[in-house]
Length: 305
Image (cartoon, rainbow, N blue to C red):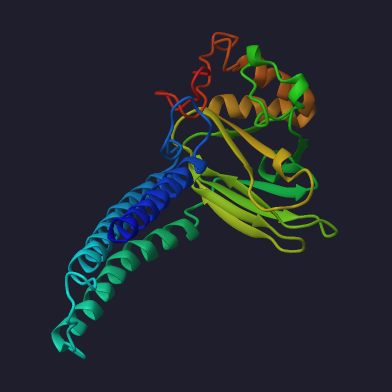
């Protein structure tokens, strides 16, 4: 009986640990070996990762402490080892300790948490605006500061995915979101008045913001390095919810300005130009370096750097 109880407790702890590892893995893009978060591409993401790591240490310590206490109770205070149970009704010092320590832990968590929320919400001198409109089941992008550039972005059908072009199953889109690095970008997100709620989520940017019909939500980010970054809709929005990927190409400012100038005249030709000029798989055209895809040592996905 005793061994069976211990086995069940340890099995439960192991099961919870496995679930935790799976949860961490789900927050990352699919790779051959990956058990962490996507590489941070913005200062906000780096702060978020640091906060996550701090929480992980605290949670791990709490889990170990509670597990040890549980095992002590099972082994030392069962009916066989302790046939005459204690009749102690309370312990003032113990009650003070188990009240004060959790409060201190919450304060330790709350202070950096509030700082993180403040920095994420405070838009620091936006240099450009990207408006995103969610629809069933695609995204609409507007660049109001670049001359009313507007286009839709659909997932490339699985049968049409071309790995030679650096395209990825269920992640690549027909039209890329092209953004400059080193620029404070204001993000405005909404959904069509007759549509449903979507969520524009880009883990590498530490951005996840709901697209709500009739409401304009905002966020901001500053991409630190060129690369190809992937995200997805993170709000259940209907039968094709899982087919609403986001593909962002972060490029140098000069390249972005050239793309924007071309997009003013013809968005389709500008998209063709940027995909030829910066093909992640081929090494880039026109003498340009390839854009590393998020996840490799250069910030890219394995096999795409």
